[in-house]
Image 1 (cartoon, rainbow, N blue to C red):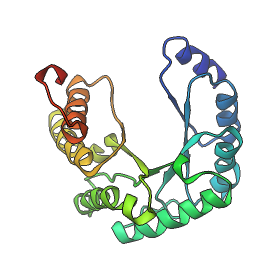
Image 2 (image 1 turned 135 degrees about the vertical axis):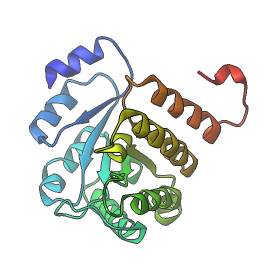
Image 3 (image 1 turned 60 degrees about the horizontal axis):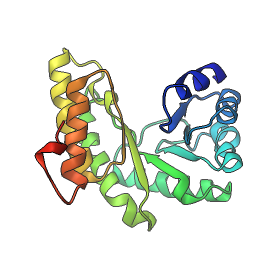
Image 4 (image 1 turned 180 degrees about the vertical axis):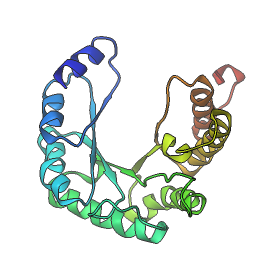
Length: 207
């Protein structure tokens, strides 16, 4: 982990997202960090509440909170995700982590699931509604690649991911985890962000 942190920080001053379920590796990464960091992440799983969540308090770091049940099951609808979000924020504040430090991941489902397309729409509703539910402008993050798991070919997967990216941006998503080596997807993300967030537009903004 220290090697990875030093190698990446040698070429960028951008924030780094430390993604591991190993609390010892995560702590080593935080201690080696010079850039701003985001810890990825915790859920209601008891082990993560005990070993990973406290690192956010200790190092005053942002942390991703997954809307999952304690046994890592994915909730079925928006209502269940809202219940988990409230409990997750309560756990964070009890642990001494400021609510503004938590970045909510509502867990984007694979469309290949029996109810995947319905859940994908539920995720959009969660992103739109969470700020009102929690009473502050909570940040959100989503893994775009989840959506196309087991897609039959790359072109269909790209078409779906590009369209859903635009919908996520419109719903208010702050951070998207996506394949930076896919220029079409990166371009879709940047244009979606422009259309969703900017007040003044010029064609020069479009990549």
